[in-house]
Length: 193
Image 1 (spheres, rainbow, N blue to C red):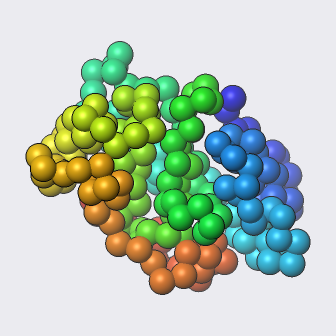
Image 2: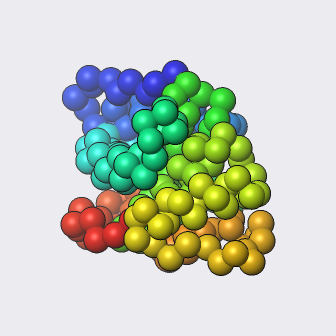
């Protein structure tokens, strides 16, 4: 199932429709909890309705760079979508292998914009091996991606815990600030993956 954005012109409705669409692609609907917050979702939905196409285009550029590291038949069919993820799940990104195409959900508010690509690389590795775990096949795919994109590969001794946030990325102080429009530098030129 591919997410189709509505043609609504009102930014709030378009943003809310987007979040409900993303929620239908999440492993668990509660991952996208902001739709249930009737008091706090107004600003977020309006910002999303206005800016989500540009954010997703930046994320897709990272996906295309990842695709270039593999032969065509090794590239997973996937879509990448930015969305605020519920803090209670303590995840920055999710790869839903049960959708067709595979869906990568990335909470760009949790990571500084220069490191968005690193989070995409991590989730792409899951999609490429078709597994949610951080095991040997994931480590091989991640190493291949890191080398292809000029990032330091994970150490050979890296265990599953070390791979959970590899390649390392920098966190933001307030993940929802981005979704409220308080991150004016997010459209900075893509510096690295």
